[in-house]
Amino acid sequence: MAKKDKYGSQDLKLEFPNDEACLEVMFDGLHTRQCSCGGTYSQLKGRRQFQCSKCRFQIAPQIGTIFEKSCTPLTLWFQALLMFSNAKSGLSAKFLERELNVTYKTAWRMLSLIRKALGQDDRPLSGTVEMDETYFGGKGNGGKYNKNFKKVMADKSAIIGAIERGGNARIKKVPNIQAHTLGNFLNQNVEVAGTRLLTDESNRYGLVAKGYNRETVGHGRKEYVRGDVHVNSVESFWSHIKRSIKGTHKVVSKKHLQSYLDGFAWHRNNRHNDRERFSSLLGILLHA
Ligand SMILES: [Zn+2]
Image (cartoon, rainbow, N blue to C red; front, side, top):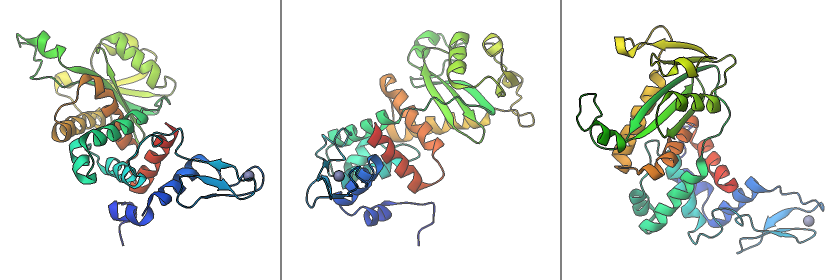
């Protein structure tokens, strides 16, 4: 018996042995079985259609979803969804290509559709919230004394992240990490009332975080934790993402970085149960 919170490819094959089984769960994700006429919908044999037992009205659940125009069998799609869902350090198109035995182009397209559908919700974070900024990508470090500082930094992407303790993470690629950008991020993502905002001592926060109950740790003075005041959750999330990108994807272009970040945020925010995460991903794609 597999562990209760684990869900792997064997479980998937048992639950969804064929496209008909996939269509059943897709139908239920989008429609109710009860027709307004009092009849009940069921799948027509050998067709991607459901029909009402009384009024004979037909519904094709894949219409209008990202699965509609795809010639890839639904069982393969489901396998891709599960692999993506279980790959906490990311999933490369190259790996998916080999595992599903599809072309690279198909694998790449599947992953890109999945990532594009994810996004991040815009419910403001509240409670105790850690916030921090970092740079991704490019080559080399932008140390203060590097004579190529400008060039090195131009290749990097600025990222702002916030994590609600015991709750969700939010990460956004931003044009820079100047004060007004931090302010915009706060406005859009972090509730003012009642929030305890934890950051480092950066004076960029001084003006823009004025309404917040803010507590800081002084990284400059080598202070990283003071009681429960720290930004360790967001910093370890940065290193997880950086390690994963390096290990799995090698490089991610600036253009696609946000959708990869959405993927990492989604994984973190749905980290507890494999089956639930798979269902949540399927639900997101059905409604994308
Ligand atoms: Zn009906």
